[in-house]
Image (cartoon, rainbow, N blue to C red; front, side, top):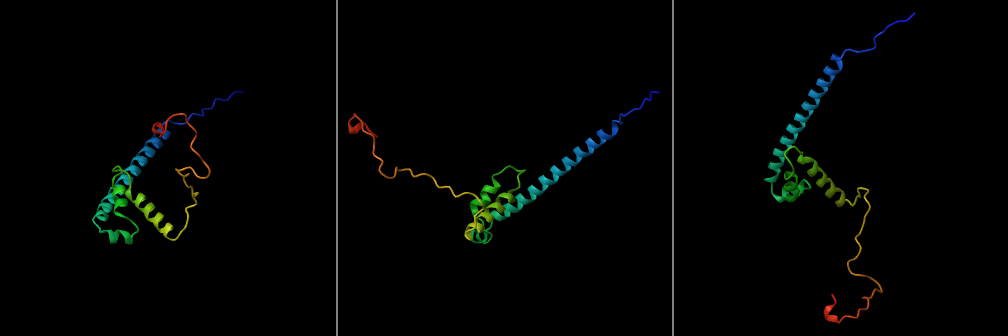
Length: 125
């Protein structure tokens, strides 16, 4: 005995779910842009503060300027928060876990000597 069954699902449910998810993603982006715009206007108010007031918050005028140079859809408070945290941690001598790398010296150290050349001294650099 053979039984014919249909395992197909109606196409309206996945399409409706896709439209709902797409509308949710658009709404989330609009909220993100509105929050970034509101925070950008607050950062413009920070730019009017004097250096002493900014220093109380752990910021400098260049931090505010750097935060405002990003595109309109970027939230400037992320950069301001990171800079203030960096200064606070360095003031208390707390590392972020990054390796302390030092650059090699520009001038050779030790018993290094200039290689011999057959050219006159006026042509050597």
